[in-house]
Length: 267
Image (cartoon, rainbow, N blue to C red; front, top):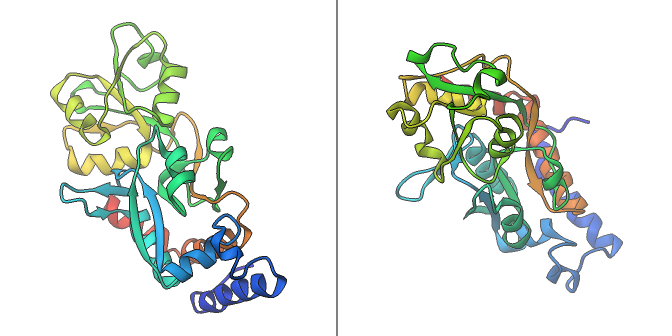
């Protein structure tokens, strides 16, 4: 079933009202966030959002601590729909699942669907589909176009720790020299400076970086090495909250708003 934007306030009130009527939530249950995250957010006026801030075009934190990006805009709009404001909770790819469970109502920012994350969180409806592809210097041509090209002794593969990029690199490039770089945002500088040869990441990030690092290129972005859906992390088993978030996301996808936001970042 599709929902229009104008239906969302009614949907939220219907879900909350239904929980009260059924006795699932009430004054006592409101103290149990796992039973009534939607009620907690509506009552507090705050939506706590975990995000790494290092994965444009989805999430980017600047030097002053301000966040921008496709998922930042969407999460801000979702909070407004819930009559709340977003509270950004900084996290890392290594600690994303742990931080989400302990501190957040939602996690956003180019998050891939993985089995490890499914163990601790429910997933939203798929927001996009993407896959891993190489980013290299333009002067290297297509020397690192395939997994076999990259998986050779002497090839310096740089990767950010804790997420699917590192997992993919360790699984596919055992013969290459792996450089684990702690800052995803400055990985591209390392490529430009020649201290690494290739970075394998999601194609959308590579395409965005073509704009900010013209000396680099993303190889075959339309034909990545693999495929994975991008999702938001949702509280495990929270039917009320997850129903509202997914209905709202369905509107953003079906109306083309999420795609328009992505296009505005990629140019």
